[in-house]
Structure formats: structure tokens, C-alpha cells
Image (cartoon, rainbow, N blue to C red; front, side, top):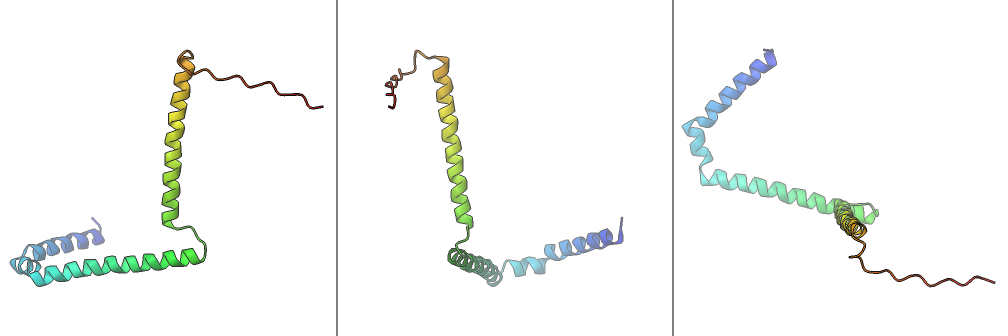
Length: 114
């Protein structure tokens, strides 16, 4: 076991002891600490949203592709792939039983150019 692994092991045990102590549990269960943690999480989410909005605005001004654009494109490609699979299955079914397929009207003869 390397020295670094030993230090990590000792630190993990000490953190476990601290987290399991009555004083830590009492502090973590206090409403003020819970509210502060919720506020910190909400603040982080709000900051991320503000940054994301700023990036979207810059991307729009510079006519760049955004994540939303890529997501829409992926959905469109996926939908088209599904539609293509369905059409291939229909074609295979029609080729297997040509009697069940509707008759295709013959193309009218084209006139020769003079």
C-alpha cells in the first residue's frame, strides 16, 4: 500500500468518525443548516441558468449552433430513422405478398420529341 493510499484510508476513517458523531448529526439536522444547504444548491442552479442563458444569447448573436439546435436535429434524425424503418418494413411486406399490395397504375407512354 502506497503512502498516498494510507493517507486516504486514514482520512476516510476520520471523516467517517466526524460524520457519525452526535455533534455533526445535530448540526446537520438543524433547520438553519438545511436551509443554507438548500439555498446553496438553488444558488448554484440559478448561476448555471444565468450562464447558460448568456451563452445562448452569444451563440444566437454569432449565429452558432446551440445544444438545443443539436438536440432538435438529433430528434429529427431519430424520427426520420424510425419512419425509414417503417417504410422498409412496409416495402418488405409488399414484396413478400404482391397480391396484397395495391396495383400501381402504369405510367403513360411519353411522347417522342421532334
